[in-house]
Structure formats: C-alpha cells, structure tokens
Length: 282
Ligand code: SIN
Image (cartoon, rainbow, N blue to C red; front, side, top):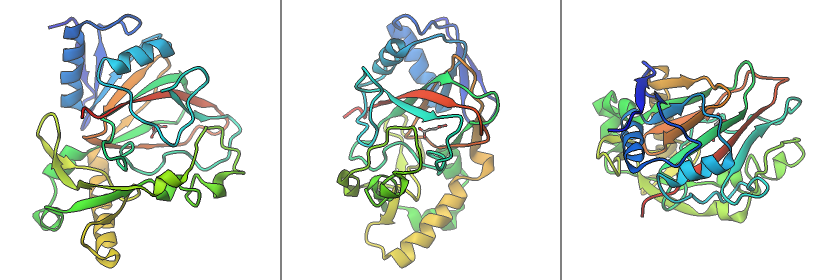
C-alpha cells in the first residue's frame, strides 16, 4: 500500500485523492492504488497539484498509451494534449454539453480521460458525470430486456463531420478550440449497449444517443425512441456526480463507467483545461 488517501465525494461516484505528488514519477504501488481507486470510484480527483504538461503526460502514460484524438488539434509543442478552451468573450455554442463518453465511436475507445485545470472560472463550468453501473443496476427489467444482446452503432458524424455541429456550420462561431471536423467522422463501429466493464467485469451501460446513431438490426423508427428512453434513464440526476473545478486540480475518469457533460454558467470568464486520453489496452 502507498501513502495515498482516498476520500469518496459522498455522491454517486467520484473520490478525492491526496498524499501523492504528481510532479514526480509515480511508483508502481502508487499507480496500482490509483488504478484501484479509479476502477472503484470511476472519477478520481487530485486537488492542490501544481503540475505542468510534462507531468500530465507522464501521469497519463502511467495508466496506458495515449489515445487517438482524431478531431482535435493538439496544443503547440505537444502531440497528445488538447485544450478544452473557452475565451471570456466567446459566444459559440458550449463544447461537449451533451452527454457522451469519449470517442466511443472508435473501434477501441479510450479507457480514460485526464483533464488538468489551467484556468478555472470563479463560478460555473462544472463537469457532470453519470455513473453507468448505477444506472444499469437500477434499470427496470422492461427496459433491460429490450436492450439485452443489442449492439449500438457509434459514429462521430453528428458532431465532427463537415456537416456536423462542429463542422461548416460552426466555422464562423468564433470558437477558440481547435476542433478539426473531417470525413473520418463517418466511420462506424458497434459496441454492446449493456456490457461488462473490461477490467472489473461489472455490468453497465456503454455510451448514449449522440455518438450512438442506431442499433444493429433495428429500424430507426424503433431504435431511436428506445435510445431516447435509454438516454432519459441513464442521465437521471440520481446517477450524477457534479464536479466543481478548483485551480491546480487534475481529474481522471473512466470512459467505460461514466458518461460526462460540460456545463456553462461562466459567461465573461475564460476556462481552459488540458486534456489527454488513455488509449484502450488492446
Ligand atoms: C469534455 O467533454 O471533454 C469536456 C468536459 C468539460 O469541459 O467540462
């Protein structure tokens, strides 16, 4: 056991971790303890960590390879760090306000995502996390039976194709983030809707409508109402941990266990976080 201290948020998921210095390489036992906490709590929060992008990259690589961020340009001088940025005077539609799990449209979606606070507004800008194990556990049998054995078709086309919401229509919005829509967004991969977590084996719901554009072997007239019903179920407030950011904070979440969504409420203030993904262990 390392000397890390883990304190649950007291909400549906999430835990704060102290007693570790992220400016230094993690020991194997620290990595093992953080990984165990991450698998148990799904979102782990490291407050009071004055770290830079080298530290962020080293932390990320402690848990797996970098993920592939097809539709983001990296920040200057880095290959694997993207900026989630909003300028104080920006009026473009808020980025990532819809529930999603990162890059579920890939064949091998990333295990996790790390976000490092760079500029945090004094108010607003919380990130919401919806626990998809809790949503599965509480799911009524009538809904579960209609989803069992079904595979969802995931695609990035609605947000990231040239015709998508971050595509041509967004070009003149004044968005400060480096989003790069492309034809690659039309690729489709399917994943089971209800599935065992690849590491813990715990059953949960994977993904939601948005990146999910249909269900295999179902007509849209049947699949879309079902996906909307699932969305209403899996994003209920009782499954949600609301994360309030602080300066010098790093958060790591498990894309296999939670959905997440950005929130606004910081008009007139800038917000910037540096982001990496941890690729799938394939
Ligand atoms: C994201 O979805 O990666 C961004 C979350 C946030 O801005 O709070």
